[in-house]
Image (cartoon, rainbow, N blue to C red; front, side):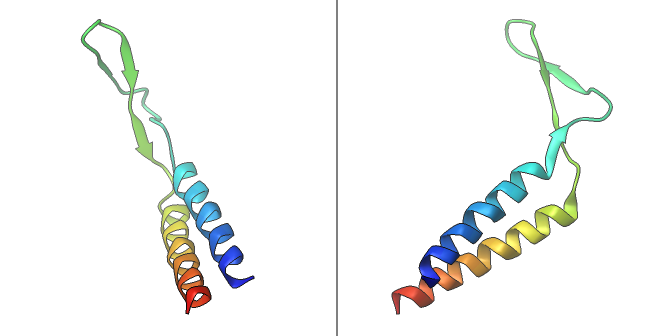
Length: 68
């Protein structure tokens, strides 16, 4: 049971980290080798990122406890 909770927290934390990045507010971009625009991502939500990291660490600790 604890291992499953840890896995769920890891997934939730990973989603939080992914959502902390987004489209650049200034529409910054680079050109690739074919001349197409590649829009740059920005770090938009630092608190969401930090909480995602904390949740992932807690999830791994719970999974480790479940193994012991």
